[in-house]
Amino acid sequence: MVDNAIYIILSKTSGVTTYTGAHIYTGVASENNLTCYVVIHLIDIVPELTKDGVSRMDEARVQIDCYHAVKLNCDNLAAAIRTALDRYRGTAGSYTVDKIIFQDARNDFDEERKIYKVSQDYIIRQKR
Image (cartoon, rainbow, N blue to C red; front, side, top):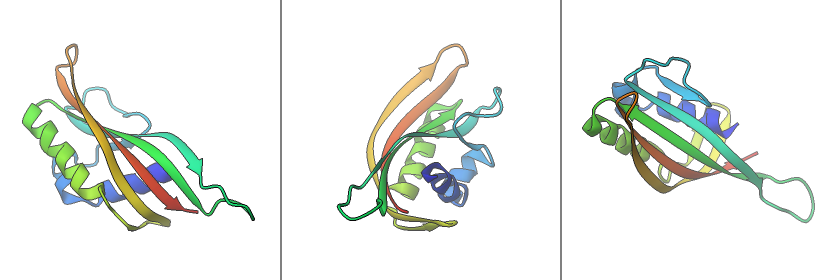
């Protein structure tokens, strides 16, 4: 799925892994006590409609949440992710990405856990 392609791209981007190490997850983070990590959420997939067969292109919406205990580092991690993904074209493992487009971002702070969060939304066109 497209979230796996995003995972591959981010896990091979030194600007991201400098902050996260191996703490990049799809769906849900597996550890609760982390101070820096990324979670990739696949929101939806919409096929490109054709008259003569199955869709050859899907358009997916993905939300990427960055978490860090230090606000500046959270912002820098979000910037590194955007640099890695925005307007990306190419292959990621066995996935062919036609184009990734940055949509928007939101900042938040989890008072209970004392951790900063930046959520980014992307549209990904992926060849099937």
